[in-house]
Amino acid sequence: MSLFNIMAVSASALEAQSVRLNTISSNLANSQVVSSTPEGAYQARYPVFETMLQDSFADADGAAAGVRVTEIFQSTLPPRQEFAPSHPLANEEGYIYRSNINPVDEMANMISASRSYQSSIEAMNTAKQLIQRTITLGR
Amino acid sequence: MSFTDRVFGASGQAMALRAQRLELIAANLANQDTPGYKARDIDFVAAMQAATASGLRRTHARHLDASGGMAGSNEQPLLYRVPNQPSLDGNTVDAQREHAEFMDNAIRYQASLTILDSRIKSTQRAIRGE
Image 1 (cartoon, chains in turn orange, red):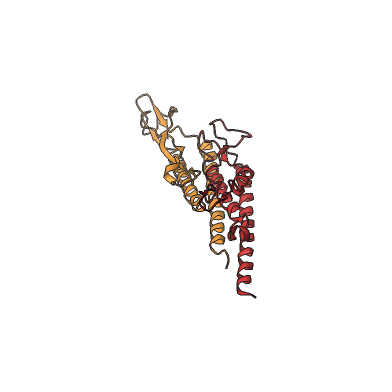
Image 2 (image 1 turned 90 degrees about the horizontal axis):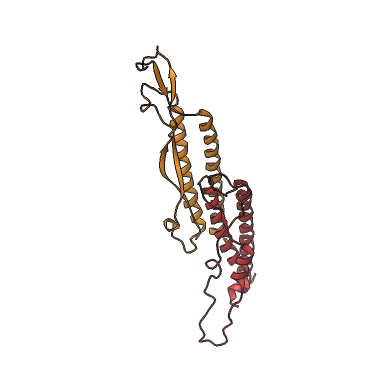
């Protein structure tokens, strides 16, 4: 029954989008972290999505294609260097290093992730209703 | 034509194809943020014609049945949607369009379901002789 595949496909999307939301909240939470070395500064993390190959949802028509997170990519943007000699973490030259997170990017990403999450939930709900109606067919 | 074909018409095949199409659109919605994903769909009219075509006729009881049971769903090629505004990462899913198609398909599935339901009920009435 292929309607049940919709559940598996949408569930994979929910999983991937929640990983994305997790990385966004982690990025936002660490946006004010300060370090005395460029290496120690927090780097933004982003998940990489990939279409799941069909054999994971073994079905005759092979139509279902879920999504999964293949890796968590760390942004390679340089950390923001700031001259703050009075800061307790400043190095010998008086610099501190802030994370390379752009809060505006993160908020836009968050809206996109929550929209995608909602649409997968909607697909799941519709599939559920259709399955229920099919089960009670002829009663 | 078998008894079930005469009573239920093409509703069963329509429902199977609608379910397959719903699954494809759900996959498109799931992959709306995947880089490089191309939205897919089937040509429903062609699939329905293939599913309801009578095919080879058996003129002898010992001929092999060439219709292959639930016809159609496997032979239909999966097509790629023509994108309106593909994104820079190569993704061609248009979420609004997929939503509309999903809704449309779900309603049509329910329509087939209702027809099938009423056919079953009238058959039951005929059997009971009410």
